[in-house]
Image (tube, rainbow, N blue to C red; front, side, top):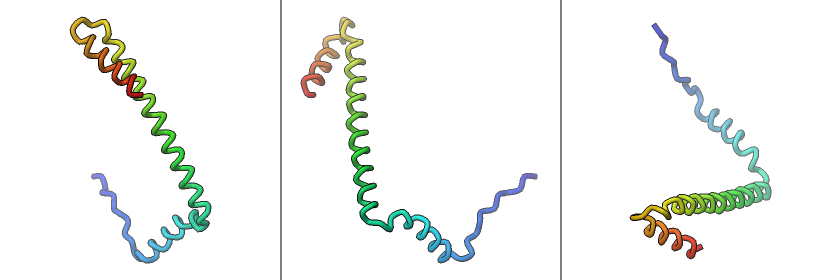
Length: 88
């Protein structure tokens, strides 16, 4: 029969907490470095959001342009497409 996996037990939680604190705090001792890394991270998140939104809107406009020639729903999609294009 297959043995059940045992979860590791923590013998001294204070020791583990101290080790984790040292491990994760070692990179952030320098406050200037912490601020710089967070600034750069924020810039990349912002740029990624703008690029992602631009690609998403371009895909929506392309998808709506496919239905321009459909007789019944073509005018509805054309109106939606022109509305999106004028709002940009």
